[in-house]
Amino acid sequence: MAPSAHTVMIRGSSASKFAGLNDVQELDVDLARRFWRAVERVAAGAQIWGSTEGRQRLIVLVSGWLAETRNLPDGRRQIFSLLLPGDVASIGGSTGLNRGLVALTNVELADVGALGAAAAAGEGKESWLAESIRRREERLFDQIVRIGRLSAKERVLHFLLELYHRLDAIGLVKEDTFRIPLTQELFADVLGLSVVHINRTLQQLRREGLLTIGRGAVTLHQPHKLASTACYQFESPFGEARSWRPVTRRNAI
Amino acid sequence: MAPSAHTVMIRGSSASKFAGLNDVQELDVDLARRFWRAVERVAAGAQIWGSTEGRQRLIVLVSGWLAETRNLPDGRRQIFSLLLPGDVASIGGSTGLNRGLVALTNVELADVGALGAAAAAGEGKESWLAESIRRREERLFDQIVRIGRLSAKERVLHFLLELYHRLDAIGLVKEDTFRIPLTQELFADVLGLSVVHINRTLQQLRREGLLTIGRGAVTLHQPHKLASTACYQFESPFGEARSWRPVTRRNAI
DNA sequence: CGAGACTTTGACCGTAGTCAATTTATGTGG
DNA sequence: CCACATAAATTGACTACGGTCAAAGTCTCG
Image (cartoon, rainbow over all chains, first blue to last red; front, side, top):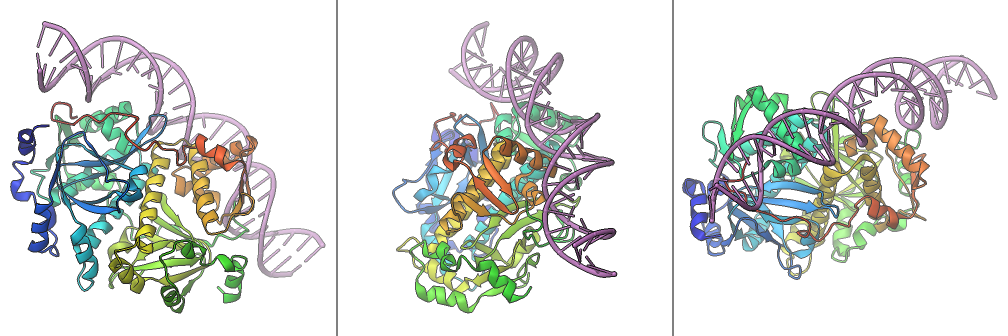
């Protein structure tokens, strides 16, 4: 993939290239510079994994979209999460066997090894890295709730709302509209549904006037209202809904 | 919950109390001692969360089972993961709002804050903590594949196989049999299914002679054979099954 | 214009959910 | 030790969400 095409990709957000990072106060400029020296470019469609030999290392996604995925032997595929600019991922080590990292668009990566050590050491303040990792886990939890307990319609809305918020945080949402480099097939593999059903669900949402989607762009109409219909981020602070009874031999399976 | 009842809980595995830890070479004895001074006991059924005030802290589960869970406003519930002895979890900080930690049995916890700093600093060797966290993420990925792409029958087997391996690693499996403090309802909430369907699936598996389950104990008949029918740990090393085409405006939604 | 990939549609099927009742297991108090 | 209370497990009847298969329609690019 030609670098020129790539440049087009990130243009228009040049100011916000660092938005995902600057947003969080703890990342100082020195570290940021260290990023830039180590930037790597990866072409859309490429699969990424560190040498299985070396130790695990952390990278920051500077621009573009990545997908974390797994293929089952029979062809089924599940996408665990999407990584957006500012997100952290680990590659290398024994990671590669269970999970693949795929560039959905042209992508810029920065090594965060040095930063990692620095951040881990700096205990006094909330380290940027720790916070980043915490959010990542939170997103995995959201993903589990989506595919575990939400209906197809809810899943789609919940997922789009997550993207909306994450992209908004790095300045990539204008007037409730953002771009998504996803086909309906990828959509399906994220949400654990079939392509056909994703298609029908999207059409239903369109008919209901809840969103506009097509040509790689999404507009959410009244995002806040959608949030409640999709159980998005409105979880009760836990523990209010159901009581937990100790599980003893008496009441075990 | 009386300490005596509790002691019964961990008896029989006293030798293996530390199995989950000793198993991994990097944990030295000094750190282990530090654990013991900080051990906390929690009664079955209790909900655990650090003060939302303080910073996030890491704990190690020394004995018993914990569940990480979320309740949706309408009563639906999803259990993200089960924590077994030797596993690490974070509590406190902003964690509490999105995820609850519940003691399924009486439980012993050890604070790993000090260890955390030490381990993070010790970069030369694979730190125990880092490895522990990596495995945790791997389990979340497995969970996502289970509920995203596996059938009910596959989910149950895959889940039981995971427990089998994790419990085996800490010496809690004898003759392919282990104890599980789970009701069918909890089972359902882990696997994203209804109780009724869990019940029917278990009965089918019993009829097929694949396992024995009841009274809080499970026996897997021919675990290795089951693994292939449940797509357990037999994922292709990624990238062989399907090609990835760049997603551009052309072929996006 | 033609090729290839993606989207859309229709017909049909099957897995899993829901509701409601019954049975079983484990306690508990008399 | 028995009757009763409670929570789990189980069953049946019915529904529906979502999957599958196959064909037709669209879009973009070369």
